[in-house]
Length: 344
Length: 277
Ligand SMILES: Cc1cc2nc3c(=O)[nH]c(=O)nc-3n(C[C@H](O)[C@H](O)[C@H](O)COP(=O)(O)OP(=O)(O)OC[C@H]3O[C@@H](n4cnc5c(N)ncnc54)[C@H](O)[C@@H]3O)c2cc1C
Ligand code: SF4
Ligand code: SF4
Ligand code: FES
Image (cartoon, rainbow over all chains, first blue to last red):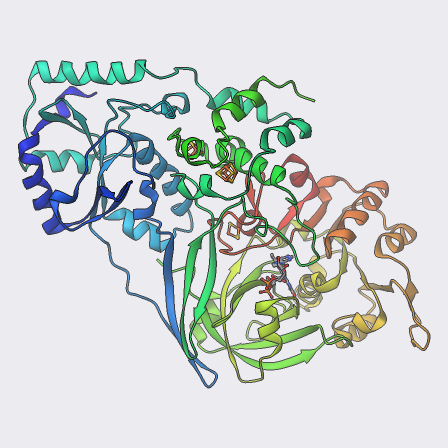
């Protein structure tokens, strides 16, 4: 932690702080919906549920919603009119985002930004501040540390909050975050509070497996992995795609039209490389004909293609795909077996 | 910054049924606005996403040549929702166009070299674009020898009859047409045989030559070893990949192959590049 840029927010001031934010921003935060903890837009500061663990959905939803309109159109008697919503920068804050999700946004930034920026994403992103929440108690499914992050990593956050019991240490992690810390209900941090935050970070990390996964795996994937190994690893996969929908970095989407008689809209909607029709061609030929090839694509894209093409790994170790897979296919086990397997 | 997902509108000026089975039609489109025409500066080998509003959009290679920029043509094989809807459209109807997309052929690298174009199916549309570009009086002498090998299953499935006839009259282009099979009653006088076999028997020399292949996956697969046998190096064999696509701009992940996206890094790749994926 960079000590100069840490200030303190007392918990009794949190509600008022959020209320202030709600005046100027759309605010997304963890909320309880029945049994679920979800990152969702809040209307009231009291909706926020700051509890251990991460939201079922990832932070990508706030910037890359599951379903999003690209434009509307009207088509009558051969004449077509396309209506595109004017571009506006939404001011929004993602509050209480876990460090894994915040890092995931960096990958989405690379994909949706670049030479040909995606206006729907970058417009939202430009006005978005990410207030991360460090993990004091990482869960057994978390492996952010192995993926180059960590339970107190500030990568991708503008501010990172660390829970000190009755108060938060708030670290500025970007220029915009720093500006934010100058005003508002923040107090200067004392030496003890800084030490406490540091200690919490160390302790949280010490509860996790420190073994790094990314680089060695990328190297390993440069050599072929036996087809039989893929088959064995992925035998139980149902191809349901839950792992990709909940993943903070998965970003495949479909584009389609929803039409009424003369009006309609073009939308984009999440898709998944795990679905059987994803690459099926008209001749019946499918370059990824079975679950084995599709699972392989998911692993290769995250751990070989993205590192090669964008110099980033497509996994931040959030563990969602580990906990939510209906057949308990644990990606860590898969990666371990691949790393250990001899090349053909 | 422009919105790369929003098509501009074009009017269908003409619809040409290309094949006897009526499965492939060429749509001739005109720009509604001058500025769209200027923005749509393309090179052969690129493609565009065509919208049929209410049905969706699909990618098609440009069949026309940029030397006639006001006339944009696409040859569409009817296989599904969007292509089916296009086939039902009429002269005067409006479609959306988004592009140009993809890398296209590196024309600068072709200058001064001999070209062997090998095509089949609707993939020949792209080679028609390239051929007409090269044949343009301003361009012809900047390229070397031009050989075109084009195959269809039956004579009645050959596209662009009018172009083929004109090309056949020329002395600055060697045109080799072939059909997989000839049926009784066909007036076909030309070759019978699969494209890879025709190339083997023509045995074009690889010297200072680029082979440009665009066609059905099977044709490309069987042509490749023949070209290699003839001495073509992998860096001088160009292939157009035709993966399924959605966004066309390297975002949606559909066309991913290795660390590349066929839509934005391709669709034209050298065999040398493909071997590295
Ligand atoms: C770069 C590029 C250039 C192309 N150029 C042409 C062209 O000049 N002329 C032409 O007729 N077609 C071309 N295609 C193929 C064309 O895009 C597809 O046939 C079209 O998308 C099908 O749309 P649809 O809505 O009619 O089919 P859908 O209803 O979506 O699907 C019907 C069937 O076609 C399959 N399919 C969808 N897209 C493709 C694809 N890209 N390749 C193989 N199978 C597919 C589907 O899986 C399904 O089985 C090109 C494709 C690419 C990627
Ligand atoms: S969640 Fe599990 S079963 Fe579903 S596609 Fe992913 S790995 Fe397969
Ligand atoms: S692959 Fe699994 S563990 Fe990695 S970021 Fe995606 S959901 Fe999280
Ligand atoms: S078509 Fe979307 S990434 Fe290529």
